[in-house]
Length: 432
Image 1 (spheres, rainbow, N blue to C red):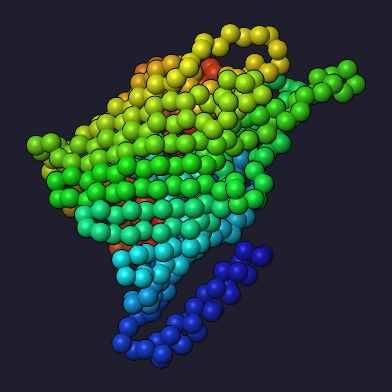
Image 2 (cartoon, rainbow, N blue to C red):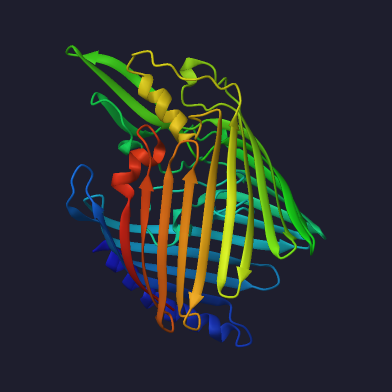
């Protein structure tokens, strides 16, 4: 009821707001409102059961609003209203995905508010992208819906061909992980996220220098602060009436990340690359810091090529973990913590190699698009396959169908979430 009331008030208010702005100045349009409505259904097998079930079903309204002042700045907001079912529970959400204001002062641009920041030029996997969190549990046909906003200050200055950007994140927000799906003994209870205190010293800082030339684009970047992806920490372990009990939490950790990326052409091919060296601030070797990963080096290189209506992207993804030691089980109740933390941080092996392929094709005068995303980790044998078909029924009316299929051995990330998150989907969307 509350959701419908908010939507009704919003649509009743917009015409009045629009009329007032129009009469203030007939020479410009100082506002813009657009968005979409969609209905989506996700189905698949229930874990441990061969029967097909609804995994998610919802109706959603998305609104994007922009207010303009061409000389001094503008504002932007994106709202999402969703009603339905998710993980066998009713779902009713009202979210402000982004809401920020820009101001332009000479060559300086400043932005303040709830924002989504995406760094990196590789496709799909970006090791330099550490500013704002993601939600691995989102069921959506749009990969961008996994991105979450956070409140931050963002400033940039352009001096052609360079642009320097600086970001300060005063309050931490964690990525949402499927921790409750990970293999833990029955005496373990998950108690949510253990966020750092609100002191300003717990904020995060990032800076990036971009180079933009016709033949080459690239950047170098630096991040210092709490990583959006937290680890798993044993908050307390005790004995109650002769029974062992343990409470675990997601606890963030500080990292310093030095990275770089580039994009150029190599003959008829596009060439992209990205690299990041990550080093934790805390002593990762101490047992008390079981949630803190080792330092590592992540790297991505890929090519892309368009031939007529076919576009193909192929990437190699690698990682080298420093000070790596093979984990030898101790038989203690804390053993699953070590395995699951390495699993989350993708540090099960000293070196790992993966391939990413994304071919897509448009047909029928660009009314039909077929895309196939495939990721396979050659080291851990984890895989993700995402076929999707998009058909334009009419102007602004789109039908989508596809699937998210996870697979992996025991004690791997995809192997832990495959039955719960793998699903097929259908969606109808209308834009305005």
